Length: 372
Image 1 (tube, helix red, strand yellow):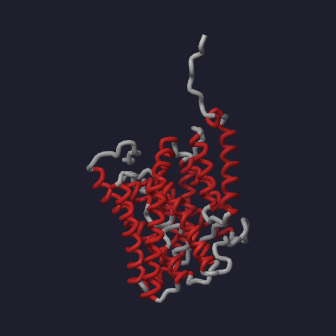
Image 2 (cartoon, rainbow, N blue to C red; image 1 turned 180 degrees about the vertical axis):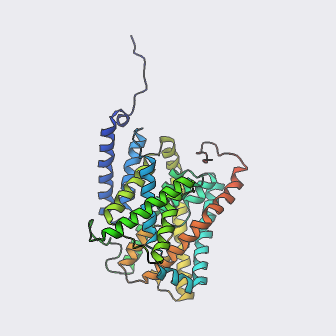
Image 3 (cartoon, one colour; image 1 turned 120 degrees about the vertical axis):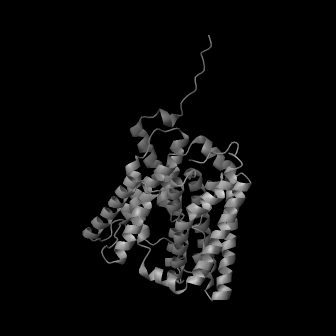
């Protein structure tokens, strides 16, 4: 007698939850080590995210609780606040026409590419716009979720660009024969720190997350601590001190939270969209290279400084490469942070405005629906 066929559960899904967590941790560690070997600055986030995607594809049941995910966002927000120094803001204010022109040019190019991806129905409107937004990748992904995009596809696009930008910037730095360019700067996992400053920074992150959750502010767990820490630091009331091990833990939680929410249909869709997304990413890198050439010709900026300053996203990777190169680091970071701030404030409005154009035509068959 023939036995009735039953759909078998994936092997990962059949494992008990402690074993799934152990497998997730092991896969994340392997991913981080492999990515560190090729000197990819975003390894601490991409490794755990890749491990989470593998488990999600196997229909694992483990999930990162929402509160730890929000607290990790708060720590990352405080880390970003550490880059919003008065020196960088002063540099932006002193040469604001140059910065505004460069930032708006990159933003216009990325928006046009997002429009093209949405018009060709490669991706839904809001997701396409957020996916190509040039800025701090982690912050953009977290904001995209709060403003209605499918943040899994946004993460796929953003971190694919992180990889492309990191590789391109490293290669170009080496072509310019900059010794040590592209190598991560090692500071050790447990550097000397001031306990009071660390506790104060963590307290700002926790309080900011609590306020954001209470008031239900979109992307608040990231943005409220970021702005609070930046203001307090500018007033001299806070010294932002975040050791590498705490940042690594925060990246781990964010990477897991993103990766574990991928599904097989999303992975299949990402695979189908890969050629178009990769082409748009390379196009954006080339366009930004053109803007860098204009800075060289008309503003007298040296070529490597101009290229790193206009690189579309992956601010952390660009910062590491710039810090180990003979470039104008303050100009690079000032332009990167100016672009991040403009994306931060203008991104939601641009995404809503352009998404309405595509929503009038109804949902795209076979594509993930936008979250309402």
